[in-house]
Image (cartoon, rainbow over all chains, first blue to last red; front, side):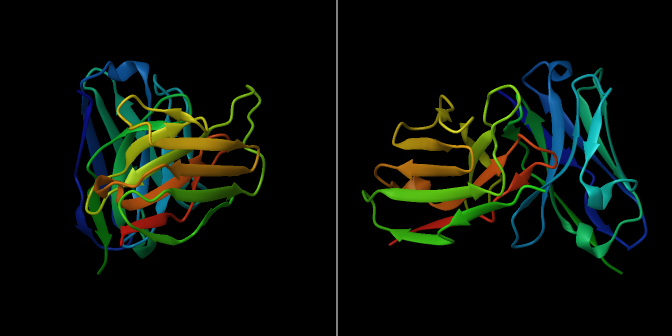
Length: 117
Length: 112
């Protein structure tokens, strides 16, 4: 059974940093691209970043480019999202997703990030 | 960015009624591979999104066959032949053809 379990969220002040993790199990992690998708409170979904199966390629939405870094450790089957210079508009539930052929076929339960002073 | 426009915003239907959700994209979702990466997901209340349909019309194995997807280029439709209680939630279309990937605003299906 594919499982994606996010951790590392919470309350953080504007301008500070936070790192999210996603522990994957139930599939060969190193064979799949992975992504982060977020959802602001009572809002819709927004793609944040994608990383290729081997970590050699990364893609970001413009609003997080230069502030967020997606990475992975295939030996630990873990995906990361390092978020720097956080803004109030980054407040959202962040979902870890498995990406397969330009589709997100599995989603984690999500982790809440609140950026507020 | 590709804008995904879903209609209606909400649907209120009784069990057993059919449902239809439209999704239109601001540019063609036909990729250079010849495939169209238009997908549908369902977010039930209080849950994370779950996969439903990929590449316009392909159902995942666990999805009941009362669901169907159709369309091409810029116009797509999700249909439910007979709504059941477990179908309530917010349906999103989204495209994986162009970066950044973009989602529709969602269609909320409520039971009457």
